[in-house]
Image 1 (tube, rainbow, N blue to C red):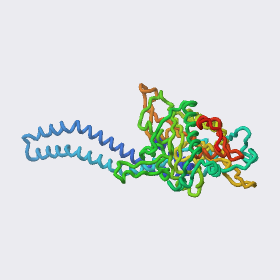
Image 2 (image 1 turned 30 degrees about the horizontal axis):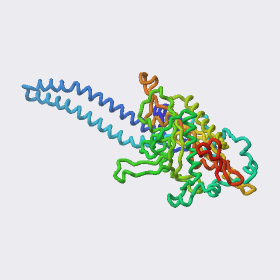
Image 3 (image 1 turned 180 degrees about the vertical axis):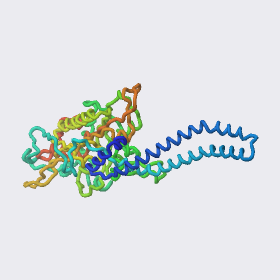
Image 4 (image 1 turned 90 degrees about the vertical axis):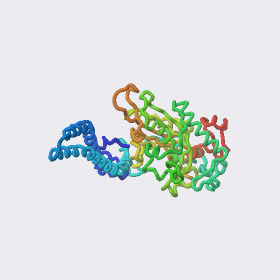
Length: 469
């Protein structure tokens, strides 16, 4: 959620930010509604102050007038009774006026809140402008020794690569037909060494973040209330991507949603809390099952493990002080963790700075990390795929956007500190998502005889096994 004070001071910044992100939102209407709300609230405060003043003064005044009324008759009595009635009517009139303002506030509040939740966080000034993901800017590439993604896989390794679909079929690592039979399109069953490898990469990623980088492992719910989805910025814009459990139609008190990332649960841990500044930054990591409807992705990567409805993901989240420089440093640090992990697994990758239109509503900046997948891309002259980068990670910098929605704050100076509380900053980044990550892992480490080498870093998690097949 954006800061209303900043909106009032500079509405053009938010209008331009929404336009740059390609998100339609009526900033002028929001400013007008905000002005009405503030005026109604000011009028209410004035009337309540008058109520309080009258509560102190009117009783004695009426008592005095009633005392004067004793023994009076005729015109004098009528005049005193008129004054008493007039004073008695004032609290009722004030109460009615306040109730009228309550009604007018209640009338505009839904529209105000609806528009407010649609306003995206403006992109940082150094985010490149663009209208789609094709305008993202490559920042860096890394290749393992002896491999160059500018050349074909065959030129690098001396044989035509198999796609991950061929590898999992030939090595018995997945069963797509039975997965679809059970759960429909974009479903799968990992089998044998496929399941073992899936578990190995997840365990490796969790250990890497906890043992090598000091993150605290957390288990979080993957079925959550709507407030958690709104608070983390996945609603309203991403509602069509979430699986909805309509408990309210079955007698439950509220509906639930399946999360598409562990970020939702991790960020919800401290919702509506005031944290001690001394505990910041909080560094959390979780591994959770994730669910995405992939609405609007019809025809895209329908076969295989790339675009699926259910997967497991190791997610990292950092909650830090409200300092732009610190947020930027953590963003770079979190990306560095993933780079180290990919290098340990000898996976070629590149970093992409996402353009304004590819940021989504909640991010000030986002870096995508794409792994090289030899089995993707157009077919070359030798009828084998040329290879292509595919997104496997995404690192986001959100400043106070999520924490403001979640009402997550800290008090500078700790519990004994003075002054107002401050909304925290938050960041998140994929550590590893599987089984999508099995695509580059299998394809890059395949051998001419159809077997697949297991990177040395993963072998302890595979019982010392060095090869599949």
